[in-house]
Image 1 (cartoon, rainbow, N blue to C red):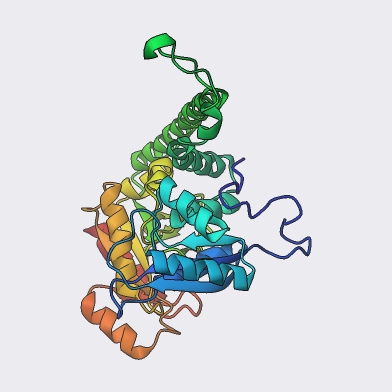
Image 2: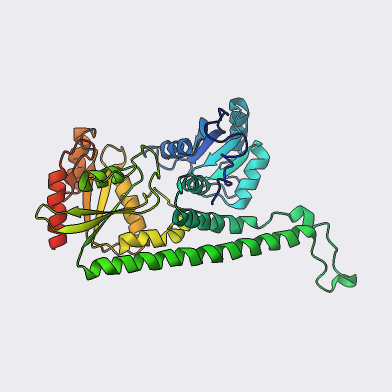
Length: 381
């Protein structure tokens, strides 16, 4: 089972429910556009989902990260003071950090440093329940870890034997380098085994989809930004009792349920994993067996959280992932969920931007009849 080794949020004595204080973290971000929605709001939600207590934020206005330390040198000194003053043991950067950036920041700040990808992988690891989900998450973790093994054990390798007289020959590898190569081999072997397991899962899903096609049952795949309300909408459309949580990435494993159009035509409705901005490519690769439920569907039902301040940005982010997995040209129907709580002016702007979208509330049932009719028309086409 994949563990939360990336952040260490479930180390001994800190498991959820034992009364121990959660890890304390400072969030780190760059703002190129002062008018943009604060990306640290989403990062804080991710941290909260992972059981991390956010005790501070630091944002620098600059278009590109510093290649050595992500922030500029002056801000790094401020970050060190903030970490010390807030008693934080963790810094989470809203971006991808190179191993060198992580090492430099940790040396100067005196706290563990992780990036957005590590945080998302950690959240996925905590929510993986089935053997399929755990295998896919672990594969993504290892793909993230493998290039970051480089450089570990460098100090040990320096004490190994040097080259032979005159500088000729290959010399003797030090224990650090030998251990590093052993770690890499172990990780690659484990990844090969997990890929084989995921491929077997993909083959089983393909056989199931083939049987449905043979029975001429069309398929609809629910997709959208994480926590947009996909599972709640699945329950509303099918009468199912799928777990619904107000948490990011509550659904990792696909759930398939039977539904019918108003005319009585049956179809399958599949709930899939939610997306976020900058979804780690390791996760996209590892979850291809799951995401094939989207690429193989007859219709993509794209659920949008209409109450989100950056709903249009979320639509763009989801469509970017759909493009990446090969579902760009699939028929798409937008469902503007949470219409019962979305401000009217936001809903009006979304309906103008997406005139074919259907306002709906999975909570109250508002607009569900219209959505069922729109699904039927899309399937007929």
